[in-house]
Length: 173
Image (cartoon, rainbow, N blue to C red; front, side, top):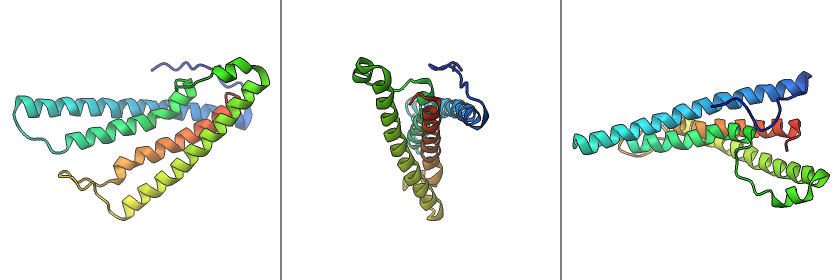
């Protein structure tokens, strides 16, 4: 994973620059965790295929683990994707307008993205705490506690919200 981004490093100093650099670092760390979660999911699927089709044995936990790890990887990697500009965007109208109108449209889009991600983060944390305190399990044959599977959603949405703030402060919004 390269450390280069689609925008120049934050040139701001002081608190704003420090916040932007901190969020960029946290987004990179989150991306590494996402990679580890994705690799874990792939390895477990390979193990499941070997056990089922080579050894002829049944499996109980592999599918559920893979769903949780790959979904968690998607959410944990999202702040890095925002930071590097790797997200899908249709920019035909802002690109055609250019100048101040383009910046205004990007800022409005970033503010809507921030509001959505902040609401998702809040709801995700509520869901994690309900699952933790309610001792919820998945209800499957494996039946693990549910809160560890939900935690990457809350952490990823929170980091994505904070990265949106950094992008707005950077002037990329």
